[in-house]
Image 1 (cartoon, rainbow, N blue to C red):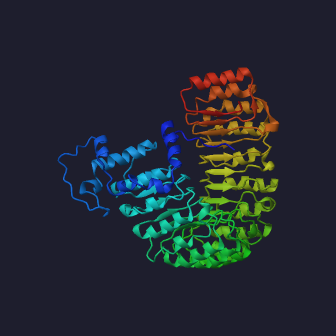
Image 2: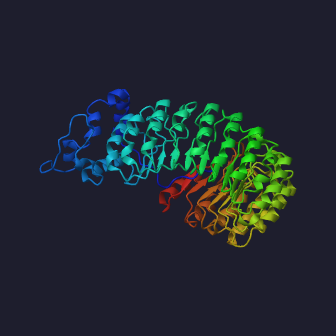
Length: 562
């Protein structure tokens, strides 16, 4: 599958900074808190900082500060201080980011415990901070208390993101003790911190009544049954909660039965994600009894829970009663024919649904034609049916239904062999002026005739909005079969990503079509990535690629085997 490459990568710190961080890491955290670091907590502006910032110490009005009082001079604690903001700017720019007084984004910056201590000294000058993101800095685990001790300086904070930081139990306890200092906090993301499992009570106990928390992300935190109990006990205090994500906590299993009934205390819940939580039939039945108390639910993710196989009927009429539901994800749930029948009954009532993911359900293919006839098609934008073993009957039913999908933006039929040789049935059914942005047909057994039909549709401007096209793993097209598509590539004016990679076992020469591709690529001005994996290139082909990449006036990345 092809991957999007960011046109603007996050700048990295200099080699000197990385070397200094290695030296810092050898020190214990207690040593880092010793002078002069601790003194800087309370006197952020030492004379060196003033000199570096070009501010003279002469003429400044100073107040005597009693040792150990933790009070700084008025000038130093003033949020708008030129000196203070200079230090903030210097710190953030050193990490390769642009300073912003309202949003501090330092994710993926290789922060160390020393950096956390320094950041803590800068919080008095960020009193207007609205969002702080320190995610994916796994070296700050165990040192969060140095930061939380000073969070009272950013009491207007609304979003705090600490995912992927290797937080410890001590970090969680320190954060819990500080939550009352953040009365406006609405978003808390602690995902991908496996060390939190079994200790969530340290956080849950501090979530007081009247808490404004709207989003709580706890993905892959190693949560246990005890954590579920702690969460269930506080849901009645989270009256503002709109999003709860407990995905990928496989140890929850049957314990979800202790949490699900408490969801009725969160009537404003809009997003509920329980992907890969070991959800079983009992928990699914309890969820069905709660849905009527969640009238505003817009997204329900039950994917990757194989234990719900054969149990969608337990959601009963309550699923159809979710009038505002827009996204239903049940991929990789081992759905049965009975499950499909339950969806057939529920979906006609879901008039606002825009995204439906049924992928990786092998038994879906034989009965999915019944499903397509019942989908409220008018608003569907994303439809994922990859790896569903669709039968020819089901595919043709989908092709006919596509005519009634005027808003369809993303269609994924990958790994359904029935598409091969019959792609035209789908292409011809696309409505005039289709809004399709993404089409994935990987490993669909496509033939040269299918690609020829795709090229014809492209020339008619029927795919003028298409941005992502995945045709990988279709070795049956043959080398010459790709030529018509690349010759008409200029008609796909919005295309940003193209994938025509082969399986390693299907490796074939690219000489028949490479020139056509290189001649066409300047015409789709948006094209950024062309994946050509496992095509064999002759020395002449590689030379053409090198010349093109050297002279091209566009940012394009060719992903091919060296």
